[in-house]
Amino acid sequence: MPELHMSDEKKVVSPKNTLNDLTSTEWVQETKSWFRQKGLGANHEHAKIEREHPAPYSFQDIGKLIRFFTKKGENVFDPFCGVGSTNKAAALNGRNSTGIDLSERWIELCHKRMELEVDEESDDFTTEFICGDSSQEIKKLINEKESFQFIVTSPPYWSILNKKADHKVKQERIANNLATTYSEDEEDLGNIEDYDEFLDKLSSIFLDCWDLLDHGKYAAIIVSDFRHGSRYYPFHAHLIEKLTNNDLEKSFELQGLKVLLQTHKRLFPYGYPTTYVENIHHQYVIILRKPKKKK
Image (cartoon, rainbow, N blue to C red; front, top):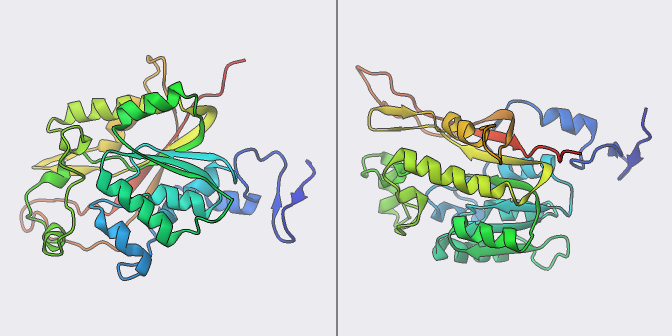
């Protein structure tokens, strides 16, 4: 049995654990195939900036993933950082991070969020935000020989945010002068009308991320399936198929699929009283791995 070292009086971490700083008990708890979405609550002071974005994700949920897939001091990358949930989670857990977003508005809010919600005086982390098109900025990072030990993001969900304001939640955002779309930029993936074109461009960006990720390390992509018109799109399955194609020179290995339960969301009588239409109250966390380097 390998000798164990103690990081403090209560926490014992195996010296063979090269992935994270968790004990065996903590490790096992994080391998469940589901977990519940956790947020601060709409009225929390630190939820104000997050709420500005039309499709934010919880920094607490991201934090769970960061703690499992990295060690303190390692580098985390988010190619669609929005208002910086990944970067906030990385900073709070002593990890360095880089985030890219196309929108100047969201990048400005990223900086503001870090200033208001994170102790930026800490020496435990570095944070970088890049305003630009991920398809171009990632290539620049590759040329600069940047490397990351974990990639985590929630990408745009096609053009579903551009639907008419027939949904109560969207109507409420309009009434409160909150954004209902990612941006008006023509280069925004959320403004592509054709689903196959969207999927191809998104997959291309993630396959470029392959070059930034260290061999043997992981990527976690948080997505939701959705309906558009009368059609149901199993988005998570389509994306997995694109990114794990063994015929490609760059291909990820699928390591698992976590279900993120969104039990706080409201129910709406879609389809009533004639047709089954789901209230989609979960997301998928696609866990991918870049293969270890061949010896």
